[in-house]
Every structure is written in structure tokens, then in C-alpha cells.
Image (cartoon, rainbow, N blue to C red; front, top):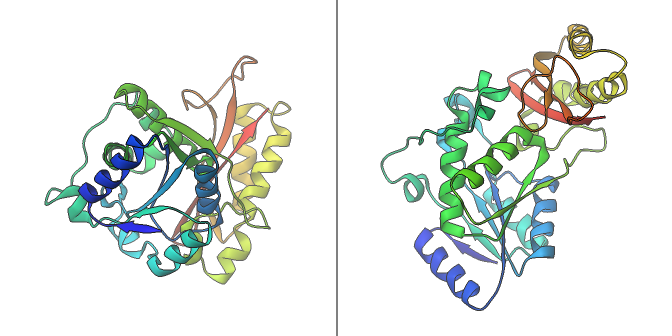
Length: 281
């Protein structure tokens, strides 16, 4: 596996690969890799000639500086994991390499997607996401980029970014990888206390029960039911639960038969924030 820290050196290398007719699959990450990330790398390898992974903890998408400072950094282990799945290229830039001396986000209009759910609770988050993803796409110039559906709102926003800026890359959303007990895999899970880790699978169990009740209870009734479940769980604090249109991400009040819906949830397990979602039928 080749490791690049300089974006111009990486661009030069990938440009030569493209001239040889090779396709590039790209997986942007913030490191602290787990099986969910590796599943994306496997897909990139399966469908492309060259697999590229970036590890960059992006400061502009954190609304909480403490969360940024505490974000797990496990570079040596990440390298071993990437080598275990035969990743071809790792891009590991410094903050200065990406932002120079101007660590600020660009402002984006994602047609309202950015104001739903996460956007209501994380000020400026999606401006930061848009800034770094657009920059990485311009450096790597991939044919296909792979993202997990755990961050479904982010996935929809990146699709909108690509469409609005006419970036020539196909965005592929991939299934949520889960632990054996159902907890959605996340780099932040490593920071859970033993007690919170034991309780955290309750999030997905509640989503699955909500899915069964969908269509029997209306959206408001289902939301109230979820709130009541979390009031019984002293170790978990519900930030939000919403049923939303998959396309617009707007909260659904009336369910229409011709639309696709998804349930979204954000929960605090101590100081660790967990998000998850599930497709509804």
C-alpha cells in the first residue's frame, strides 16, 4: 500500500493510473477504522482497479471542540487494517495540507437538506462536510466514492453536492455494518464506557420495533412511543427521533403511499453521541 501525505504527489500518481485506463474507487474516512470502513474498501476494490482511502479528521465539521480533540486516532492500527484488505493507496494529509492557514468552511446550499435533523443540532456541520468532501474529490478525482448509510443525511447531502457542482463521480451508499448485538459500527463506539456499551444496542432494538409499528401507528404516535421507551432508559438520552421522507429528509406528518420513509435517531450515551436509522415500509 502506498501512503501519500502530499496532495500534489497523490494527484500525480493517480493521474498516471487514469491515463493507463484504470478506474479509482474512493473511501473518505476520519480514521479509527472498523469493519464497516473495511466493507467499503472491499467494495471499492471489487468495482475498481485502484482503491484509495483517505484518513483526515476534519476540524470544520465539528461543532464541539472537545469532540474534535477526543476523536480517536489509531493510525498504526488503521494501516494494518487497510493492508489486511489489500488497499492500494492511503491519503493521510495534515490539516495544513488541506486548509493551509485558513481553517474555515465554505458556505453551501443543499436545498434544505442541511436544515433537517443533524443540521438542527450541529451548527455548520454540513458546511464542513461539503468543504472537505469537495476538496477530496478534487484531489482524488475518483470514478466511484463509497459512503455508509449510517450517516444517511450526509450521504444525501454529498449526492446533492455532486449534482450541484457537476463533480464527475458516482456516489454509492452502502449498508450499515453492525456489531453482533445490533449497535451500528462507529469510531466513537470505542469511547463508550462498559455500562453504556452494554446499553447502546437498545437504540437499534427500538428502531426495529418502530419499524414493525410503522403503518399501525401514525408518525406522531410512533414518535411519542419512542420517547416513552427512552424515558425508561436512564443511561441513554434521546436527542431526536424522526420519521422523514428519504428524498427531502423533511419530517413526515402524513404518510403517503408513493414516498419512501426512514426513521432517524440520535442518542447520547453519556458524552458519546450515537446516530442510527432504518428504512421503513
